[in-house]
Image 1: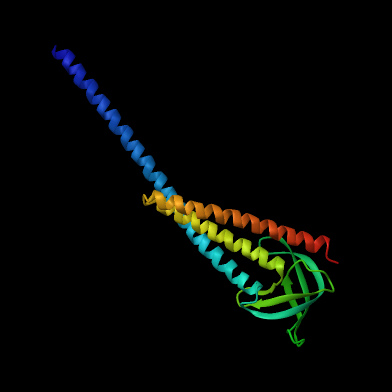
Image 2: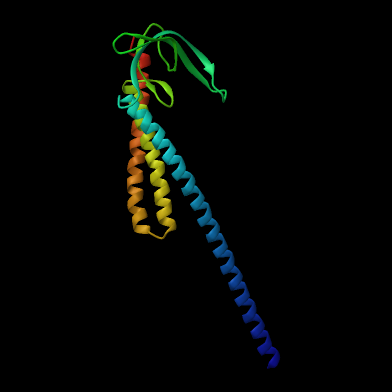
Length: 201
């Protein structure tokens, strides 16, 4: 009887130890998952703020709310390599004020423009010359909405980590709407680029 009781106590102890080890492992995995989610949310928050702020500033310039307006008469264009070896089109020409006054005889802008054309530009305080027009507005608007989408993802993740499931569910709906809007803006930008290259002389 004593031997049987001892075996039962031993088995019970083993089951309890196994159960505790399983619980500890499960809690460790949960803590690791929460840590990874927190890091992802923090990264998305920082990236979203930077992307939204920068693209919002460029969008403000594209619609004429910031920077100095001007017109660039394109004399030449060439494909050059940037600091990270990425090819981009760089155009040179004369920069004129809206009144026609010559500002710069060799202004430079990164744009896919036609030689001999005159394009509307704005001199932005942080980035220099940027193109205007519907194409620029559509592109920067799409990127701004994309930044808001990333911010929404970060906020939803943070709400989920804090245990506010209902708020996270509501926020995910707004995030999905922003994602659809960003995709639609990207499509409009693509169509604007296609129109400029195919239909404009």
